[in-house]
Image (cartoon, rainbow, N blue to C red):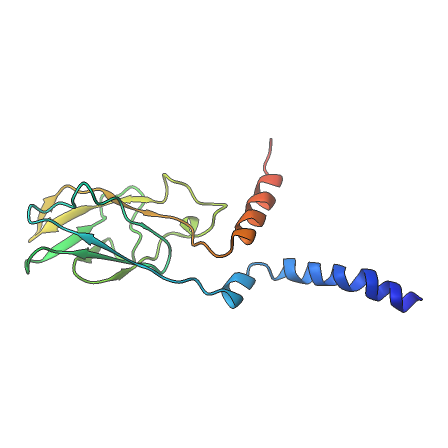
Length: 159
């Protein structure tokens, strides 16, 4: 009788506690996120076309600025108030650059549209050109886990 109660009540409770305890690891272990490559064209007048929206990427995704010719183009984040979403403040156009943003941009509970927007400037042969920015969003893993994190985060927030 006692063993039956333990199996009926204790085992499901232990399973739920175990799953919630390992919650941060589950998406990484079970559901790999597909990385994407965003290609951003550069016009001959050293601009990104106005029809091209700001790239929206997550950690590990790749951004590739496509130059119109063989001249050297660089993407400069040195004046960005939030730093760079890459490992360097200046990256070369024509090469896929993996996104490595600040930690605040990697989690839905700490993400902020102001802190995770990275304005940049294009440089053509060292001359600055105006341009928009890169928007980094938290990686989408599993909507259930995103919902749980938001619920747990806002439950503890002061009213």
